[in-house]
Image (cartoon, rainbow, N blue to C red; front, side):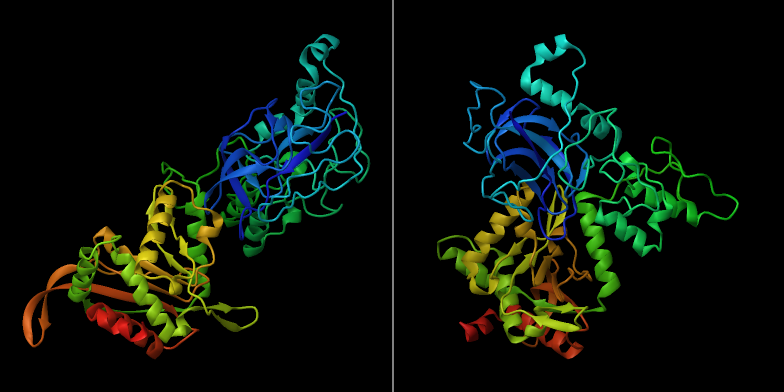
Length: 492
């Protein structure tokens, strides 16, 4: 008989704990091949198509489009192998993976955090599910019968804001009405028997940062699972004045507005890219003692040099690529700013490579793609990589790897028509260079007043990695290269 395997949401990148279902790519009853994408999800970093490591018939999906799932929550279940001889899948499934006589194998391909080289052999206690009627059982067939077996789980996901794993192990679920053994998975949780029923690390962190004891809460999720809404409701109740605290609202009731907030205001959840940006900026402000210095520079000669390069033929060179080339040259002279602080070890980690991030505004919000080994690229290579990453960001195709691992960030806010800014350091980096718009201004050039192309440069840096002299030296070197691009020839 077919073996039903559960595919859970894998870890899709560094520090990601949840993802939102954007679009299902398969339906219940569809036949899927090994490594076929089954769902498109949006994380705090990128849009990702998630491939299934098993081949077979989809018997259940968990979560509707728009639902947020924690990492480790089930996505789909797949019936692998042949339910009966002569089935269309054959004795080993559509991709020759597994069968009734042995465990199914995965593709060997992996996403971050899970492997598919072999499905681990586990003893599974499977209880048969009785069909609603003999007629219905005969009419539906094996795939629909498997779908019916998972109907209670799908119904549960329709009642809660996020699909939750039936268990933290791979044990098969008990059918409705079946007895549950003491201490078994699925037994009701009480405050004194075993761990706190929390899956999401975000919920634990929220409670820990606010000094809230999770054992004192009653979860509103399936089997008493504590959800983020439960923690937020408890924090609101504790913040209310004494004598005015109401009982914790049920999930389907209207939440009382926060004291002092406009009663008719529209609430927008901080999630996805916006939520990730909010968390990172808040952490940067909490942990990094930053300082900012700035200088005006005459960019006339830089603009002339770029025009001459583009007039010589070949691929066009972008201004951002020239600024990036200047940044890498300055970081080679002042490596203190190409670093990060390990707060636990109380050490400064200085990098030998420059992975240059650049701020890009997209329809999904602000993203910071990273150009790997920017110090080893010339102006043409930087231009091409900036164009590729920018296009991928606008199309929502950036991968988690494209958005992580930066060591220094270049922020060209001049495209918004502003002259200056004090940018927030992109944690855990140590510095960010901001570039304003380049505009004609009166400027003293060679002892006489003239109209020149002037730009304001600003540097925000982590004061733990260097003092103001180093930061000022870096910024002055950048300004010198902008005013006299020939300075770069010293290092060529």
